Image (cartoon, rainbow, N blue to C red; front, side):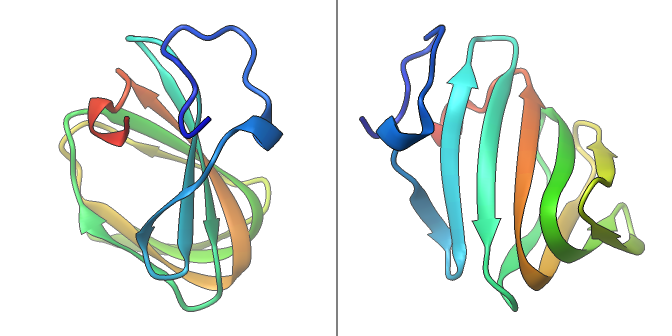
Length: 114
């Protein structure tokens, strides 16, 4: 399966397939419904999550690695266990400093990802 189905109750990682939105980044859509979506992003050192904004609130949990994040012009280095809030319309992006995984929660779901 490439993407789980909307409202799919059980999503097994081994049955999902990642997409490459930019060099060194693998995005894997996990469980989602209309109101919320969970996405795993694997970054290799030096890869970039380009500056952007969208009409969704996004919470990012740093599962591993180290990243330099910019949110609304403010820059911080974040590592495993840190959490970031990016409300709708706020410009944000990152640079991966050490191979890592980010877990994103979007509300509402990102229809453009599926």
